[in-house]
Amino acid sequence: MKNLFPLLALALVVLFSVGCNKDDDDDGGGGGTGGDNDDLTITLTWETAGVDLDLSLVDPGFGSVGGGFSFNSNGLSSGDDLEGPGEEVITFDDNAPDGQYIISVDAIDEDISIPFTLSVQSKTDGREFNESIFDDPDLANDGLFMVIVVKEGSNLNFQ
Image 1 (cartoon, rainbow, N blue to C red):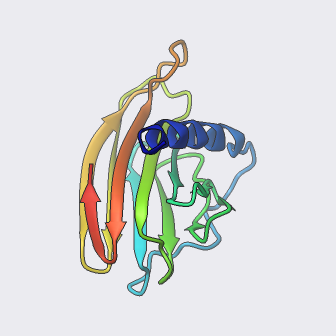
Image 2 (image 1 turned 30 degrees about the vertical axis):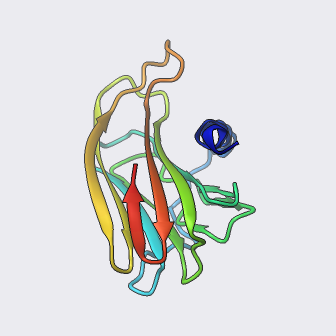
C-alpha cells in the first residue's frame, strides 16, 4: 500500500485541481497568510501576466488543499489566482501532521513556458524550486510539476 500512496495522491491532486478551477474572478483572499508562526508554508509565485497556475497539496491523511478550498485537511489556501502575475499560498498553522505531502503545480491550458518559484518552508527547514512549466492543451499529463516532502517535526525531507 505504501508504494501506491504517490499514485493515489497524484490522482487526488489532479481530480482536486480540475474540480476546483473556478471561472469567476478570485482576488486570492481567504486563509493561508504564510506568517512566521506557521508550521508549514508552501508558496507558489509567477511573474507571467495573464496565465493561470494552480498550487495544490495532498497531506498525509489524504486531505486536499488548493484553489481556495480545503477537503478533509487542516491546511488553509489563500485562493486561486486566475491571471498572473500571481501568488498562491497553502499554510498549516502549528498543526501540520508529520508524514508525506505531495505538492503539485499545474499549468491550466497555457501553451507557453511559464517560469515559477515554489517555496516549501517549515519553522526550521525548507527549499525553493525555480522551474518552468509548459502545458500543451492537446496533450494529456503534461504541465504538471510535483514535489514529495516528508515532514518529521520541523524537518523536511525532499524526495
